[in-house]
Amino acid sequence: MQREPLQGRADDSSSKPPDGCPIVDFDHHDPALGADEIWTRYADLASRCPVAWSTAHGGFWLVTGFEEVKGAARDHETFSSAEGHLIPMIGSSRSIPIDFDPPKHTDYRAAIARVLSRERIAELRPLVHDFLTERLGEIATRGSGELVSEVALPLPLMVLTKLVGLSEETVEVLRPMTEEMWDRVAKEDLSRARSEIFALMEGEIVRQGEEGGGGAIAELAASTVGGRPVDFGELTLMLTAFAVAGHETTLHAVGNLFFHLGTEPGIQEQMRADPSLIPLVVEESLRLRAPAHGFARSVTADTALGGIELKAGDKVLLTFAAANRDARRYSEPDSFVPGRDERGHLAFGWGVHQCAGAPLARMEMRALLEVLVRLPEFRLASEAVFSGLEGGHHMGPRKLPVSFLDA
Ligand code: HEM
Figure (cartoon, rainbow, N blue to C red):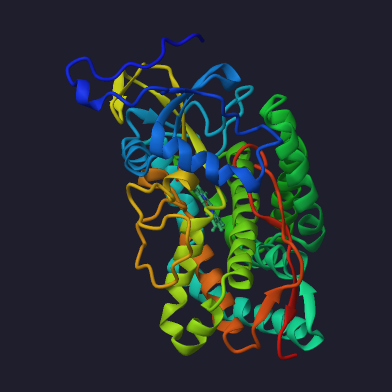
């Protein structure tokens, strides 16, 4: 789609963005877009043109400003999720609940929220603590380790086995299968790209049904949408959401947290001296390196965002990770400020699609720090290796070699 270079609101010339906006060269699927440069690109975009037009993938609005991202996420009627959360969205396959608008979204979301209840998270907390105490204690005693493969990945996978009863065999293949899926989502039909994961989840549903256990799958199966029971396909999609969203983002969130602790002097010491900082350190890590970068919306009616005219049918990428470093919102946006009292960041999104797993992820990250403050300090032993934007929206460390100082 060819666009005229930018239109500010006709009746308000002051809302016109500066010269040079809004056409930009930005492709979130570009493999060259690595962790070294992405934050500089975001900062530049958010300061120059928080709502810019990218010509990649047929054209879409790239939103990087805090108020603009939050405003669009809050207005789910104008910024619909029903055309899919990815750009490009190839084929008709949709994810549950993220690719639906209310009222259907409300029913799906209620079913998922029941499995992620406060009580369930409280039950999981001691297991998470025990797991982390054992894993991190063992690495600290050894004196060194690699925190992505030894902790950041196994932690959310262990939680999934407890939360939705995934078998060890399923969990073993889930990560490589997910990585392969991310490689395929921008190139082929989504249902094909995800077919192996769907088959894996179908196998879980059948196995758990035969074993007759109660558990989360039975709970999801008993839920209703629009007054009727969910069908097998819907159940598979809900379980897929748990399996993929439940590990991918937490893997990166935990990896980023370790990265900040291992590279920013003083944070570990400050937390040890004042453990009440723990929740704030978790939020600051999520703000500074939001693990899930951007999610798509489709415009349902002509509208304006940040002074730019958008047309019905336009695609929009809400870049939560960029918004979290918008200098108009945050002082020292690129610095890790452990005492920053900031819970309004957008790492979990905003509005009706705000992350259903946020309380679980927060519990896991806080537990990690509660265990770490009882251990000797650690430092990165060599350079961290970061992923690119997997599937166009997930980024985090792949390798974090560390040494514990006093061990
Ligand atoms: C730190 C870890 C996590 C981060 C940063 C994260 C981030 C996000 C974001 C930004 C969204 C909003 C997407 C949108 O607006 O279109 C979202 C939605 C969602 N997340 Fe998470 N997530 C995390 C952990 C989890 C976990 C552990 C689960 C489940 C076990 C989960 C399940 C979901 C689901 C089901 C949705 C869709 C919600 C809806 O459409 O109503 N997430 N997540």
